[in-house]
Image 1 (cartoon, rainbow, N blue to C red):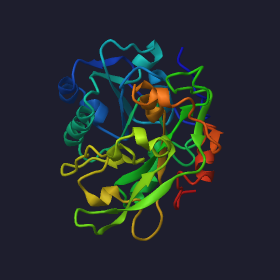
Image 2 (image 1 turned 45 degrees about the horizontal axis):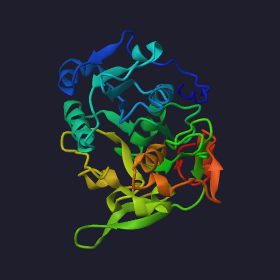
Image 3 (image 1 turned 180 degrees about the vertical axis):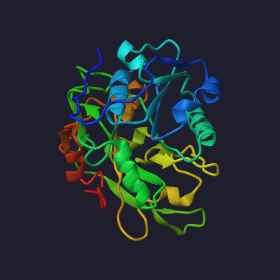
Image 4 (image 1 turned 30 degrees about the vertical axis):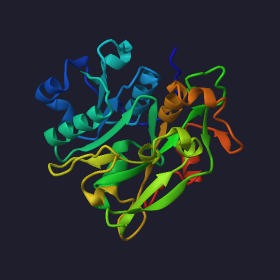
Length: 307
């Protein structure tokens, strides 16, 4: 049974379609599902497998997205309470480039809309998300003349791999409380890029021998406003340099975190790494509290001027 995450005490009504909305393909969704993209913020969730898919959807529905779109294979099932609240698009997330291609098609189909993307077993946290909606947060961010938000992918992992050999344990999730690093990003000529950083840390840092170099970064521009001239690149950055910045030139801005079991799943499903990893725990592991306050205290998200 999929683990149930803690219910947030939110003071707003969940929104979503009253009847199940199913689309046989991305083409059909873009042709007939425009109502889901009419007003943001819209969550785009890609199911690479069915691990913690239900908890992922429930978590993001609780955050107050105007619409939640899940891209998933036809053979995956959804609980009845979820099927009536999400737009379901038949889709396979392999090879990985198909996800970026799909997002870019959605961007072009609905310019001017705040969007968010993640994979299953990933959970968005932003400052004060237990009492404020993602719409409220993005309204403030927009007032700060920002069209994108930096997110840090914070690796979650099972504390006991004997009990949870796939590396996923929502009820007993752990994270690293230290070991995160920022490196100045450089352009193709070796020049520093303004207000852009390459972030590293978590499982991708500790088990870097098993992670391809280009997959080790933990920064992701997962929240953004779509535009006709904007495209998402396969390295989770955008072709518009300002979208990739962590703040405006005048002061710090909001940042968010995507707490993710994705690296743990990959390390334990890959034959080249699974037998080399008996445990993900180390001296700086700590239980994940499923609360934005912990991420603020650890410096993994930034409230900026929003209080």
